[in-house]
Length: 115
Length: 115
Image (tube, rainbow over all chains, first blue to last red; front, side, top):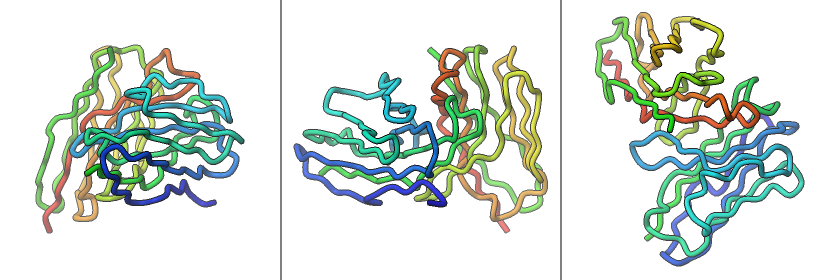
């Protein structure tokens, strides 16, 4: 596609519910990133994929967060047993090559609200 | 641990004014530095990318400078317009992450340009 597509745009979850957030990167982009952006803050790195390999997951805040990219294209970020502190905008970005040398394209994000 | 700080947090200027946004980072070991724009409810749009070996980059009315040794970058916006109103984010890619390209963001400067 022409850009990075994220779905759903908005998600309201009851505390304790599991959620799955989807990212469709630009076709052919090797690198894929997930970021978490709390209200009024800058995005914080969660995890990085190079094709299907998850090379860096150092930013995942707890073992309730899990990400996958099984075929090297679409990625899913799953949050189990959601907590109120998980409320944030989750941004996905892709890049043509590794290292982001050619720049990044960000999606519009999924706004998650845990009630 | 790399930390990125942006000053001011918010700025309001009349249309036509030239302005400077500031970004500082604590560790000079960076791969590159980027400036992004974020509109409400939207993802991030890359404005300028400066490699660690470069001193500045220009695009239209925007000019970004990088002084790696002092840990500072500035984004200069000439002849500001109401359409420039947005949040501007500065981000660095730590040197050790050159094979992943993950970014460390500042908290952003929210700019309002009044007609």
